[in-house]
Length: 331
Image 1 (cartoon, rainbow, N blue to C red):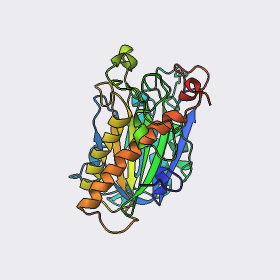
Image 2: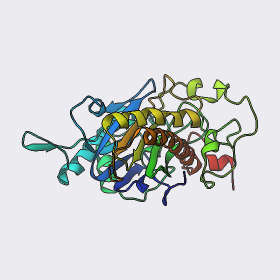
Image 3: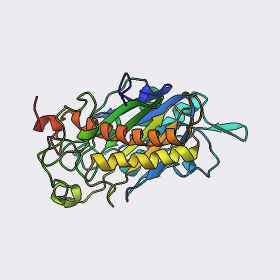
Image 4: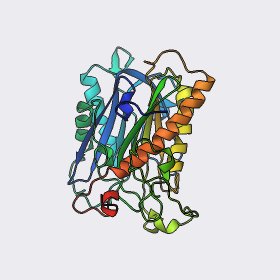
């Protein structure tokens, strides 16, 4: 399953991603939108999620397609980023048609980055403006690492970030986008090797390979549980196949395996781990059972790679509470 030409979620034709962030605030948001409405669903496996309009993505709900997805820092304040995205969609004439009007739909998920050393003393929440700026900035190429929703993200041992990856499998393009801010660790003890090393392609996060030691996953002293605070890894997986909402739901559930392979521990009571999934339908006929099997597997692999890339690409900023991977592993 080789990566796509950009090794980004925007290798799925028609998708665009925009970031907006503030280095002083140490927070931001990331918006995914598309040239046309798309089918979507989501799955939550963490114990502390923060979401907006995710119920409408369940397969039994009325709305079949949406126009954008929002990942944001800021904890519950960050849900306001969707207001700015809705304003951008409305200005573009996008939305769900009902009763002679249109209602833009931009489901959102947030992570907790309120204790990362940034200036959080705002009077009016900055997130609606950040959401609009991210929507307006959406394009096929976008920054990773300390960018967008990953600007102020942390892991247990290192700064987190925003990551993306893609692959080609069974005639389909699959991509992942993730803001990495977990209770757990993305690296093995010593902060050199990535738990996701077995999924790496083309040395995309250093080419160091798996940690050769064993018995590395039983040490909870390396987690944020020693300094309890809400965390969360929030992600989007996408394909150009034509999927129903039920199939999108299955892909979202399967993609959570990518979190569990790349972050130890994952899906804790303090994490709000969530995966959105979407299908543009630009790649042709509906997916059959065997193609769905390959698609779900590929989505999990892409997500693991995107998580490691987020941490690998993070660059230090003044006042960071933790080092970046590149601080600990200088070139």
